[in-house]
Image 1 (tube, one colour):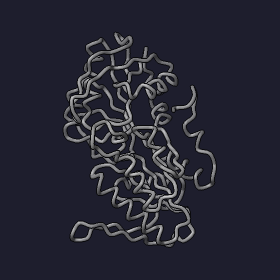
Image 2 (spheres, one colour):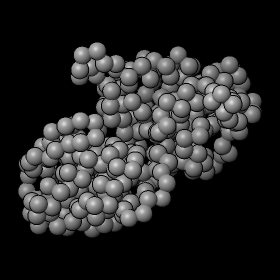
Image 3 (cartoon, helix red, strand yellow):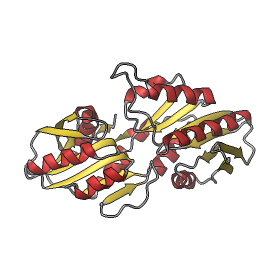
Image 4 (tube, one colour):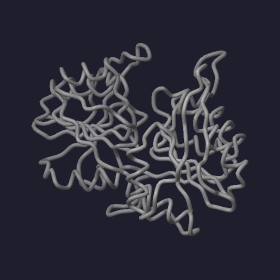
Length: 314
């Protein structure tokens, strides 16, 4: 078994190999003068079970292309099996035609991965579960919830209510509420455009309680911040947010600084610079991904990785 990494999240790739007890595979990735990407695998992979770790975080197109080129290089070097490890799967929000004449880019990315030479996918907290069906190769889908749960146990939150910031996240919120033995609430919202949302109502009892907002992805933090402001108006005592992938740009950071969210709990699936003025706790999923890689290599079950007290996270 060998594990290689693209340039999107090398600290996570090194943490994964460290958790398994092997060295990260040697490769050279550098740009040509015209901006094209050059890749060279610096060690023998003939007949090897190879894993490529790459989050498709911004710059998304660059990291995707880099991954395709790495996979092609490994395939042409006669790797026995290539597994793409995608801690964050980009373009996942474009998973259906919700307007006329728009693409289903999540499916296009799936096609390109298979065309490049991938034999298997290992992903974490896909934005839409049906993306697994876009592939005709095996997909192992992990959840960050067990890592989040272990941390939240230490917080000793009182009279907790788990809140879904929109209808789409209700299943995830329900799973958290079951495990944390908390009640459930939901925020009704209306999206104005790609970066603005309007929270309109809360269904559930909030007043005098600690609230935990759960979501898989935030970028501009519009949904989270609007939901948090509404929860504060409804009398929430303390507000935490759990987000698997926090891909925060300038707008999102500014919104979080001014928001009533006391703590944002996220993971290291995407590489993020240090952000001042926001209380962010970053939990590592390296152990979870490392264990999944070991089990895939040994053809063992990965199901137990998303089973824990209270039932499955799915």
